[in-house]
Amino acid sequence: MKYRSLIMLASLVFTSNCLAENYEFTHREIVASPIDNTAPQLFLFNNQGQLIHYSDRYLQNILSIFRKREVLPNSEQSKSDLFTLLNKKIDFSAHDYTLFYTSIDEGIGPCEPCRQQEEKIALLDAKFPKDKLSIHRITIINEVYTIKD
Image 1 (cartoon, one colour):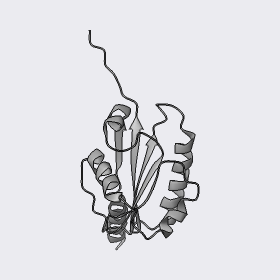
Image 2 (tube, rainbow, N blue to C red):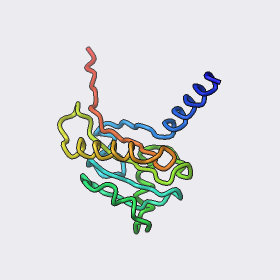
Image 3 (cartoon, one colour):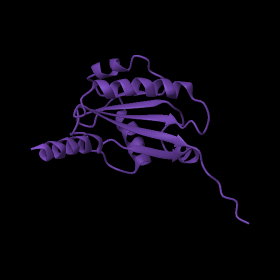
């Protein structure tokens, strides 16, 4: 019985975290991509894969975006641009909401709005059950150059 409980607990932890992903792109890759070259950005999708919120700035009252029910006008292009960058399809049906957010890595330099947004997103992660919200992070990282002799 004890081992069964441990196995069940481990499977719950594994399944709740396996769908959210962290993506890393260099500044050059972001500039070359069709999404905006800015951070923080938020893309919130409902369980049908419809974009219901987009913002390209720090959003203090992040809970307010979950009240939205209408699909954003011309959102198919924004959705297509995001998936072109990620180079993959996403299954939205497993969660009520799927959130993608962009952030600038601290190794590049300070981004106070990014850090503030990350704090708000951590609160969301703690508030929502894992089956209700999937959070994906897109980090703009420092590009490493190698000098060959």
